[in-house]
Image (cartoon, rainbow, N blue to C red; front, top):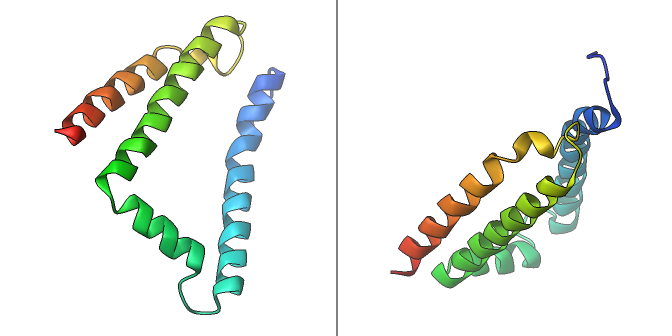
Length: 105
């Protein structure tokens, strides 16, 4: 195991396995509820994401999420795990802005 240097470092180490476990539990519950056929929620989500307008909205959510994280990363201390991503968030936001603009034309 890696040496934990701070609380934010411990959080980084725990996030990956936690997300994996949550996704496994969600997939198992989806399979249990669906009993071999596509669930109604899955069908609605697939129908939603199949539309260009929906993909634009999802991109917008992530774009403005990156804007929020950019602002938050300027307020956190330098030893925080969010501070290390300070330069990445604006890049992702700009890339999503251009991608959404292309998608709308």
